[in-house]
Image 1 (spheres, rainbow, N blue to C red):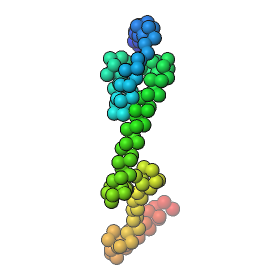
Image 2 (image 1 turned 90 degrees about the horizontal axis):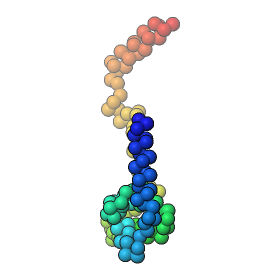
Image 3 (image 1 turned 60 degrees about the horizontal axis):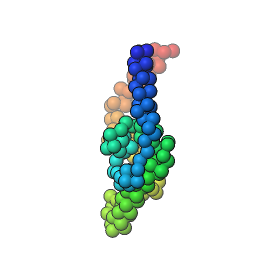
Image 4 (image 1 turned 90 degrees about the vertical axis):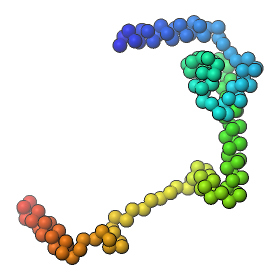
Length: 144
């Protein structure tokens, strides 16, 4: 276990050294991050650029503009999809309307379970009631 930890530290130090060139994204890469941010996760964008997840987060710390561009791309995509959802809901798409109201309007579905068998389908029959009562009485007498 200690070996794994030591190896992990050595790998991290190696990444820091190879990353010590303080990579930052150029303007073309920033544009790409914004575009990809609409459809990919941060980890997937790191894969696209051939870097690790930890490296991209370090770049975000060194270059806040890169994280801002990722968030901008993500926000643009959400805005487009949300606008389309509203158009669909206004156009009479019931599923879109329900989805919008659940996610944005605080609507919740409630499932009520009838434990009392108010329709009588699960109620004991008259002769069953006598058996149940006899069992209750026996249990009551056994515990006294």
